[in-house]
Length: 316
Image 1 (cartoon, helix red, strand yellow):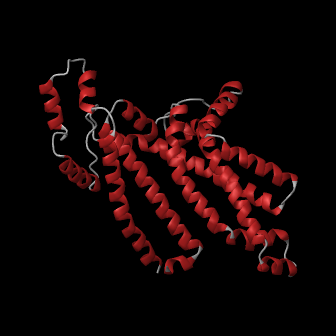
Image 2 (tube, rainbow, N blue to C red):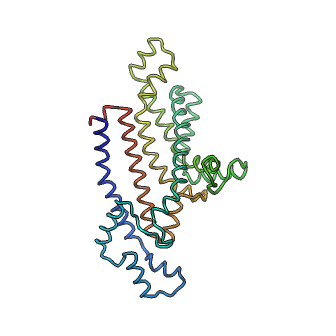
Image 3 (cartoon, helix red, strand yellow):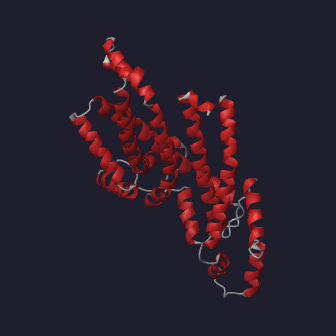
């Protein structure tokens, strides 16, 4: 049944992907500015009608809008996202060269949020109304309220400038073992909100579970509080926590745009912002589609984890 459930979820992705590609196409076509006029202006030449006409024909912008749409959707489904107007390099190749830093940043932020947020929420629930509970919940409120870019600027000042423990800008070079110091501050900045949300959700879910009759029964049987929490409570509080992790992973992908600019990191977010300013619409479309696909895949992964945590979902 799990295979059938996964197959049904994959089938549901097809119209979602087509809808996302279509929406991106419409938004880009409604955007102000003419990429060809901008490109000709960058070349330093006067606007030559013949040159503009030739470039429009080269990039297929002289065709009817419905023909452009059908061609674009067909190419996008097969993995052809077009060619960058400015670099004349395939969009997919350009994005692939910037994909790793963004994925590393998002996964590092998720790791920080999960490793710190969930245990803090559990401790706050177990020690309800204690000093620890108040400290964790106060920190969670601050973490949810503070914008990631503001947290990033604060971390740059405190841990990069005032106490230079980590590099402030850039992404480093080499493998992960060489670049991890450049990940710490951006991952903390973008993961602070997720950590706060997970702490609050973990506390709420644990408090709900700790009120259940089977928890009282376990305590009445003489089980230690450690066994009650770890064997019975945490497992049954997992479903809402998984939900928050899944939703927040999608948020982290989008938040990477701002953080990559603040920390001058390479990545898809920074690439997309630069493409927007240069009106490189094929590259902008490609970046947005990759972000949309990332969100869709994260939601699919969340559904799969749901089915593992609660097998009853596979029969719906």
